[in-house]
Length: 323
Ligand code: ASP
Image (tube, rainbow, N blue to C red; front, side, top):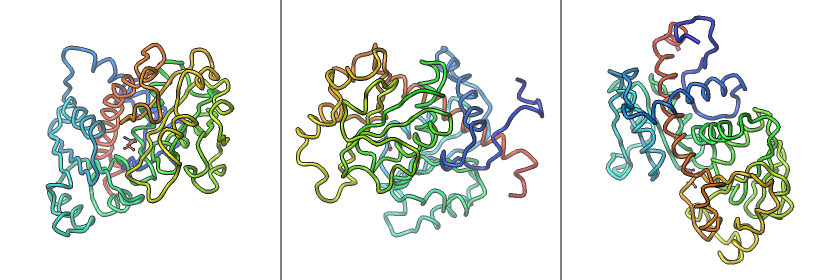
């Protein structure tokens, strides 16, 4: 469909703060646009100029390797100027508040702010105070929308669709923004989500999210299409959530024996960074017949290009000028 066609479906929002509340159509628009960039990123010339003249600031209050690099590459491949601000060098260390930092950056007229913050809700708060588009690059244990989109793109490209699939998300659900964004996206797109975790790593009343809950890997993995493993986020844990790493791996780590319960061609996913031998057996992580972990990283760049392009298109449109 022609990009200038006024009847084409659009993502009519200023920001991308989370997956919760997005319609299946909005998610599909983001995924379809991402698809075009997968091909472009595999060519020798990966550059386009759709963000020429635009400024993107990556504002990361929390460490990140892949998400920050991925947004940086995405912005540069579209011809934008990308600036990385990490908390270690920022004035936040000198006591500036989140909002003051946002206002300072806002005064420099960025077009997009990509923000990661350790507190759930902080990115949404910040988005109210600025004139540009804001993309949530992960807020506390709340949401990480571009991760869920890249996971969905990976699945859709491999299996052709999302509806009707059975997907197990396993491990540290409690601390995982990846799990939350994926639950919203997969439910919205008609997949069935199972969560597999020890009781201590499940949020209270998790069933309300429309998922099935298991505390046993063999039962939970029975006949699933996708096994999505999560990192044990020890940096977010205060106190003991499981007796030992060895015991955790024995009961909840993905190995051949547990995986044999899933469908024969089930795909293995992990958002990274991985703890090999903690939540996933190292050989399985590298089993390129079944593990799509590198593909997830590849899809990440395409998804972020699509999000940057769509949000900057919106900045130009009449509907958004008065918001
Ligand atoms: N990279 C993902 C995130 O930022 C997952 C993780 O850190 O385990 O949430």
